[in-house]
Length: 236
Image (cartoon, rainbow, N blue to C red; front, side, top):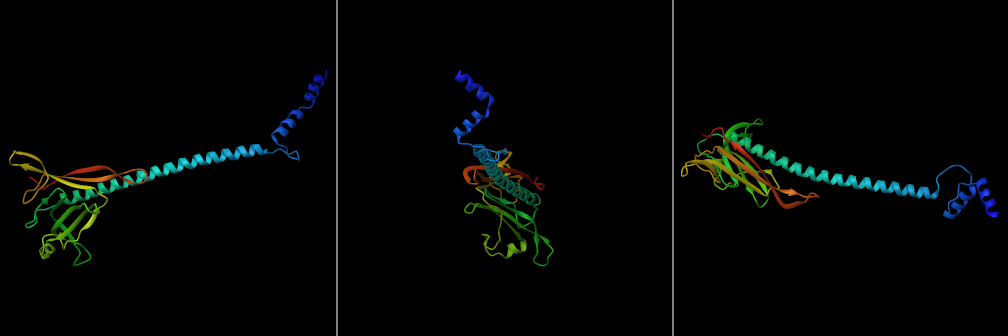
């Protein structure tokens, strides 16, 4: 009878169990009776907000690193493609000029072309001269020089000591040139690693080797080669 009376009292007063549970958890309602968050709810909410913020930060930083790596690799490849296009433009515009032949090796080539000369006026005057490209493995640079014929004649030595070279592209591991020539011994056309004299190749194959970029924008031992074949309009 006593238990039945206790149950009846609990049903009549449902707040008894709720107050007992709050007392056990150490959570007490606001003294004013106004609705609000309990301490436990605030702790759990703060933990969830911090966890979500940490996850968003990790995703953002990871995406930023991947973007930076892709941007660095893409920019260097674009520099190589632009440099190859500049070489192609100069090679296609080469001309025949007595005293300046088409000469090429595995890592260099030179030929006659019209050179802009600013020595007499602010406007360029195009004069016959020599364009030369060569690779410096010590610095990893592909260098270019433009020298008029008058300047070439005034240079006492033949080792380009008086020629000014400018960087075409840096951070390069290899620069290779091949020449499409007619082989008189085999009676067929083929690629050669050198060209000199009055012989003009039908085409020039230029390859630039660059290092691959790893995560963190660090260079690796892996390499990538970009090649362009340039046809010569004046070749027979």
